[in-house]
Image (tube, rainbow, N blue to C red; front, side):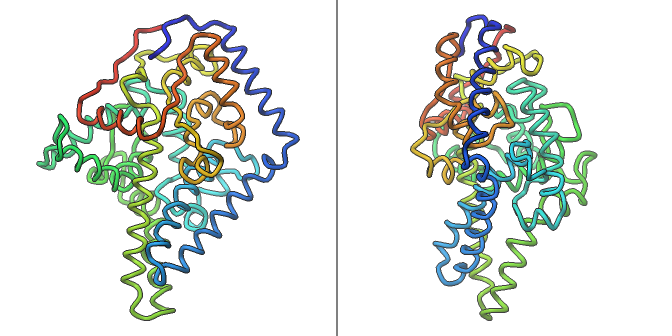
Length: 371
């Protein structure tokens, strides 16, 4: 339930004090100082371990590479692009073609990501017409885009809806995520959606598609890895290619489950008016329009959720490191309770279920009245 109480300066003061306490603690914690380089090294080691098993143990390799891909994107790339790791600046670490092939060969163009995600999504959270990631609007655009191709996406539940939902989860980064980041970074209309099959319009060129959206990932995962294994073990390229495709599908499923439900569900409000950044209302929206997932410990935080289960803390201050978000969560929960602001934290499967209900039309995300 969304809080209907009036947010006061006291709420803003308490939130900012909690953030200040957490950031002050980080100065004396070695784990905070070395988290970023350890995360980068861990990502590279697991990736190369997975590559080495592609033909010998394809199932194990697919799981390792899917886990590593999610970690590289959700933990390393995400926080580097937000500026949470000052020593790893996104312009040096993620904008070049070579750097993206080496560091995070995912479908995330960091320059466009900063415009689409950091600016549009974070400053206009769940604001219809401004936030490009309002899921109910995206689902409407999915149906419209599929309808333009002569394909009807069913609503109302049932086997057909479940199959479509699973199919969308399996390929969402290819047909939506990669192209949408670039397309939306060039327009201010948050209701606009750019899909793979919309390439060629004024907001997404073939150059964008090849060199910014898909080039690094395709070159690294689906060309270089199979080719390397073919050179080492002739006849192995098909197994390597299938393993890499399986890893990518698993990565899509995992990332869909931990990213898309973050701000969706009938219990999380939408908004129709903007609010000043770093204001009491902005902090209130960060809390009431986001959903955390229940944590099962540091391993699940890092490898299953990529610390996206602390979505409320992330939207309160997007420059927080993963470990700072973990420490802020109990403090922020107390602040929210003190000021009668709803703080949602549920198991991830419940949030995915709400997302499915939104997809089928069983639930509707409504626009809250101006506060």
